[in-house]
Length: 189
Ligand SMILES: [Zn+2]
Image (cartoon, rainbow, N blue to C red):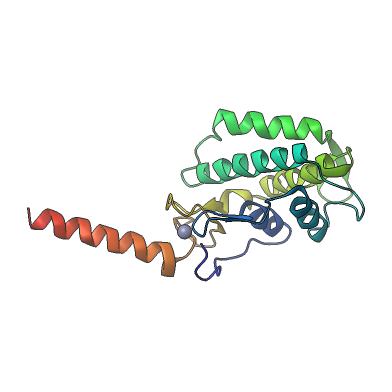
């Protein structure tokens, strides 16, 4: 969703996960993670990667695979559907690379935390945020826009948890106009 970028942010650090998924702007055809340097810079700015750790081309491929698996998981949040098995496999492999370990926290019980360093650990930090959000029950409200040419991640703050689009003004209106055109086409045939 390149038009306004004004979809609802997620609470707390779940917003970092939303921003990660939205590094690819499908609608605008731009990817903020185009090079390993982009990835290292992004992870550093999100406080997930220590200052001097580099990223390699393999790290970039790994991060992009995780990003798209997360997008599939967020699409499944619309109907409370199970996460597709391919995405589950990618995320579990990433958790293994990050050596994600159940760790007892002082206030929040057992939580997944990465023990690997470098980009693997940074990706693990993102997955830990996903685990925290699942435990806090905010995860199921993080979704991607149902518009196939958009798929922008947004936080569904609606009371009924029924939000479908990144933005009512952008993709909501597009869908309404499409429905209106379809109805008009039907009524004239
Ligand atoms: Zn959208």
